[in-house]
Length: 115
Image (cartoon, rainbow, N blue to C red; front, side):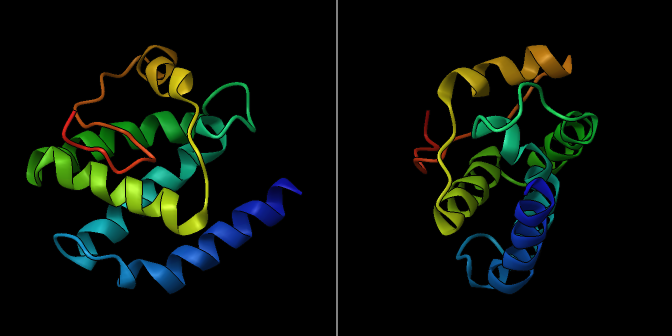
């Protein structure tokens, strides 16, 4: 089942990231590719983030430094909306602690990236 979800998300990302309207589709492609590794944890399907998710947060921090941090947040919010997934707010808050990595960009499935 987990493999099916990962395959679905990968195919979905490949098909739909070009439709996301933000800075540039290439920028969101990179953000979405990295962030996909954290979706199962944030949605409550896994008890802890994967090692790859935690490593991806470092990549996303660098991406946020190149772009506007709100742009990274919007990419993530659009991704969540497009695939119909909701994030557990307590898991968003726990992610930096569990991964031992600060997060310099907001994470939201509500596309409220101003806070």
